[in-house]
Amino acid sequence: MPIAIALVVLTLGSLLFHVVSPWWWTPIASNWRYIDDTITITFWITGCVFTAVVLFMAYCAYRFRHRPGLVAAYEPENTRLERWLAIGTGVGVAAMLAPGLLVWSQFVNVPAGATEVEIVGQQWQWGFRLPGADGKLGASDSQYVTADNPLGLSPTDPNGQDDVILVAADLHLQLGKPVKILLRALDVVHDFYVPEFRAKMDMIPGTTTYYWIVPTRVGAFDVLCAELCGYGHPYMRGRVVVDTETAYQAWLKNQKTFAQTYDPPHKEAGL
Image (cartoon, rainbow, N blue to C red; front, side, top):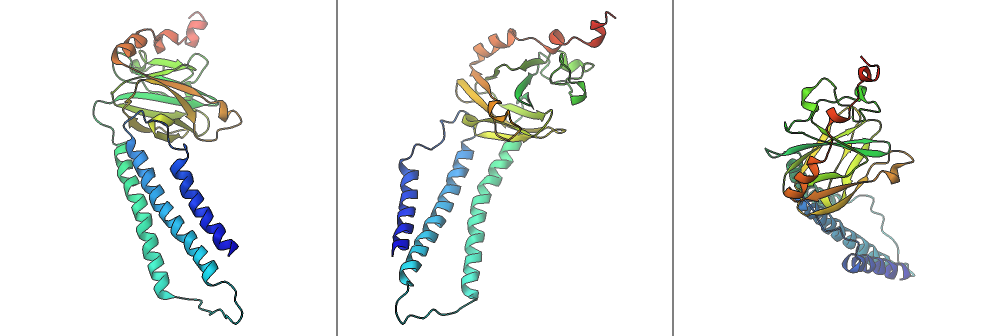
């Protein structure tokens, strides 16, 4: 009886926690409410299964408790029960996976006209790159990384000369405009995560991953690294600022381009 009561209390306490606790997400600031919806569906399914299983355990603990003269029946297999459990589990898993697959398809299919913005992660800071007047990002490679070229842009690519370089500074995005987020890491695996955007993805050294967002709320939002990347991982912080079009253009005019900041070796040698 104490075990049965404890299981019932555990179930009721878990349900009450999810109803009254302020654990829920921060207000969303992008178009990815679908992520919230998918997680909510997952919580409903797993919550119903959790409640049913624990209450069934409580029932069994009470119904089949030890009593004088009661003998347990040995039944190692029950084909009918196993079949229903397999079918029920399969339906539950499919119900959780299907919304995620639909959202993933939208997550990686970037709409036409989206502006490309590159996020570069390295131990333990963020670097950002925006296209210049030509609207194109130049080529980059880790072999080009130097103190004057921290993001590794190709010095010979004309498309990169007007790229806006931001290191240890805020990234500004324009309200209501789709943005393709290109993700690149220079050393180990990182993960660019803005909780209010509900969108994140691992940054793998040697490759470029991506997703897209539409900022929907003006404000400043913290950037976190959501992948353990060394002892400085907790301090790998940044900030994304979402501006109106007027404020964004005013900010962009005050930023320096790659051509203005890069000092190639031959200049240092006086050649």
